[in-house]
Each structure stands twice: as C-alpha cells, then as structure tokens.
Amino acid sequence: MIRKLTMIAAAILFGLMTLKSAMAANGTPDEAKALAHRAAQLITTEGNEKAYAAFDDPAGGFVDRDLYVFVLNMQGVIVAHGANKGLIGKSFIGMKDPEGKLFIQDIITLAQTSGTGWVDYHWPNPVTKKVEGKSSFVEKVGDVVVGVGIYKE
Image 1: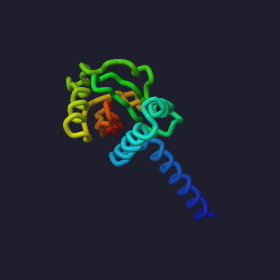
Image 2: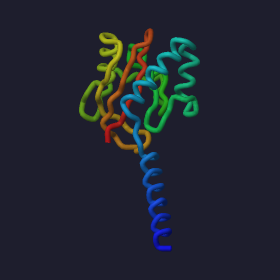
Image 3: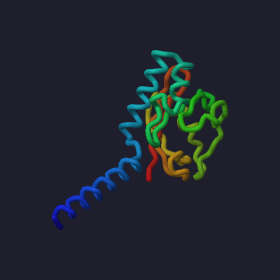
Image 4: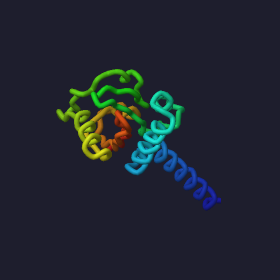
C-alpha cells in the first residue's frame, strides 16, 4: 500500500514538473532559425500581404511560446509583428535597447551585408513582460528583413 502511494505521488510530482517545464520552455536557437526560414519561404511563395497576415495572427502558425516572427523594411519600419500588432507601421530605425544599442540598425546592416545572421540586444518578453536579453536570427527576403528571436533567461 505504501509502495503504491509512493509510486502515485512520484508520478504526480513528475507530471507536474514536466508540465511546468513545458509551459516555461523558451524557444531554442534552432527553433528560431527554422521559424525565420519558414517565414521567409512563405513571403517568397505567397507574397508579402498573405505572409504578413499569417505572421500577425497568433493562430497563424508563426507564434510558438516566446517565439514570433517580426518583419522590418530597410528603413526600419515594422511591417509585421507576431507579438504586438501595435508596432506595425512604426519606425524603429533610431531605437536603442536599454543598454543603448541601436539594434534595428544592426539588424538591417547585417541583412544587407550578410543576408542572414544573429543580432543580440534587449527587448520586452511578451510571456514574462520583462526586458530580457534577446538574440534574433534575421534573414533578408527581397526588400524586407524577417526575424525571430530567442529570449535568454
């Protein structure tokens, strides 16, 4: 009887730990990169308008936990944003993160010079609502830059 109760308690504890871990899990660098590639592919195959609508829709398949797609034009204006539609149409070219980094300029420069890569900066996490370290994988597609970032705890 005691053994059976111990087994049940252990199973419940394991289940709760697994659930907590799954709920709190952040996206990985590989997941961010894959999501950015998938977003770039959608822009290429379906066009900007259809792709942006999917990126902006939380149920559109491009938001996963703390991962979401954002798209900037080469002037630093947000044209799609999976976590905050209120940012669409706003210029961030001169925006600095809390540490003074002109990260949008860095993203655009990287896209123009290398086509793809990672940029580090700080940004509010839509899940925790705290400003956290972030690294975004960005990819140039035509005249825009697609990005997906990971938050670093």
